[in-house]
Length: 396
Image (cartoon, rainbow, N blue to C red):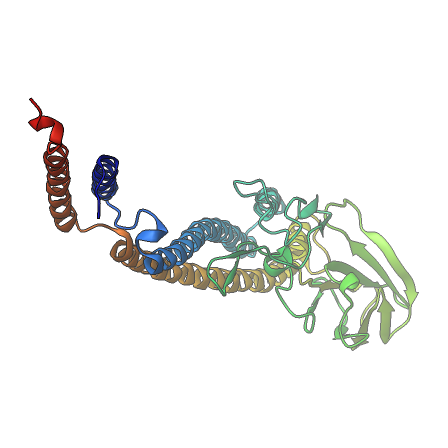
């Protein structure tokens, strides 16, 4: 086989370029710390590394979501703690109002204090998070959930709850429907209270009956006085925030009295001028709170003591409901902490596997780099020797 001069140069140049290419690749491995620079270096490792990188990215997003969910849950727990503190304080003031030495003026001071606490409770119910989304509006996070005042509060949110995905299979609630906290605090069964006036001279008494089986939602959160005029009964209603009682019914004859969807039975022998107070509790904590304030500002037949007895029981219902919701939030916070721990361990596992697949062994890489430099130098020297064998070197 004839070896031409062109072939010698082409072969030598090709060998040197190949050695340079290998040396450059080894240099990239050392400089980047990666064994797999391109998928061609190790197709299987490259494919697995791509899958693991995607999984690690998803895990990182879940970690971000978990932190956000944890922040929201902490904010919820903080606001619920404030709600519980207000209700507990109101209960303590109700106990104080039940002291027989309290004068109407003293009760007025307590009522003023309770009005301020009512507004504070309403402010907590309308809490917004850092994104200006209402915590207690359900899905309607841009809508102020509670509107109104002591005369009446209406709920503008819905019954849903916003969630955030914190794992592959877990969507964590990060908000609450206002009804979960401030409504549904008690059953309507047993929600009617009756009190006799201390000034009654007869032996009459009321027996409360539900008509129908329990009061309708629209008939709750109300307070009435029933007065016997010697032949018939007159009924007036006290409305929170109002100054005067509003006539509801007159000329009712016993022994069964029906008005505003309620039914009461009169027993015994009431005397003319005797009066009775009836309070219908609500499932809503705002309405019950407002009734308590109204009994201090406008005492009915039962006096302030009726409002105190009513408030103690229904504030307890409200406190118990808040504690139940706080327990739920606490359980979710524990769950998020557990997910964060699992996610952290999983991230370490992903990092370890990716390192094994992608990272270079520096001792091996540097050794290969040094060896490749020797190969390159040998190729260069051999090229010089071979090209120096031309016959022209022997011509004189």
